Length: 358
Image 1 (cartoon, rainbow, N blue to C red):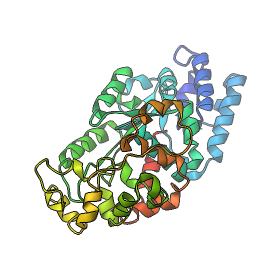
Image 2 (image 1 turned 45 degrees about the vertical axis):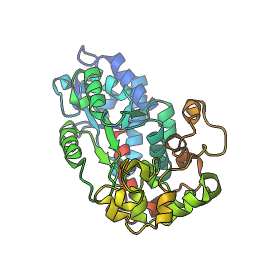
Image 3 (image 1 turned 135 degrees about the horizontal axis):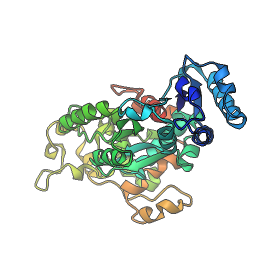
Image 4 (image 1 turned 90 degrees about the vertical axis):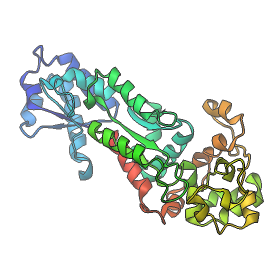
């Protein structure tokens, strides 16, 4: 985050409007939380010299860090100025508000914090390693929050309550599953359009996965590597699907999730549109894919925070562990998995969106 300091802060430094202690806390917190500081165009180095020596040292260091940063990151995220508390929407803050704002973590709102979170962490590890996402996450500078389906709106409302109903305090993004059974499935289109309109007004980026769910982004190499563990016949059947078919097959539930109770156990029993997408799948392979396999977590010792979930030994809980634990999940293999999409650079764009809110 780049914090721009307005000239009014320096003009009233040491007055009740700009408390010296709060100013120092803002600078030290900015440094601790890896933020940079820029000066408004009306400011010069003489403004820094008017600040108490200890604070001036931190301000100079942060300002130098900003100057030496790559040009593409020279974009202010918020402005600190006297009277900033009067603004509710644009990111203009008083000194006190700035301290509150930079102390609150950036929030990535997903459907399931643990499972979807592993995919987000894999994206950051492979597409934006310089951000050091795991370090920021461990220090609560960024937080992955689960919203359980459509609960993202309630999460946003909670954040607004916490921050006095001021939209400017929101620094979060929302990422949800497409839940599409086939490329032209528009069952949730209106819901997503409504959310996009709402969140655009709030300044909250909203992304819908192009594929059915995050599981569908797992690189093909991971399936091949685990043919014995996940079931040779199931993996062979899955790998026989075309890339687009693999985008919309329910990996965690199999075809059984889409087949009605009294429907034929072949592609004709699938919902409209999905039956066309999978109509060339052989009956033998279709039957192998009706159920998803029961798999175990990746070889190794699971971390304490996920042991309880992994006890269920379910595809839904264990499968996402491979995003972080398999060395076959890399930039190139993930890019190959999205190369045929409408947006082949989708994962790059998601990484850029996350950096934007941090």
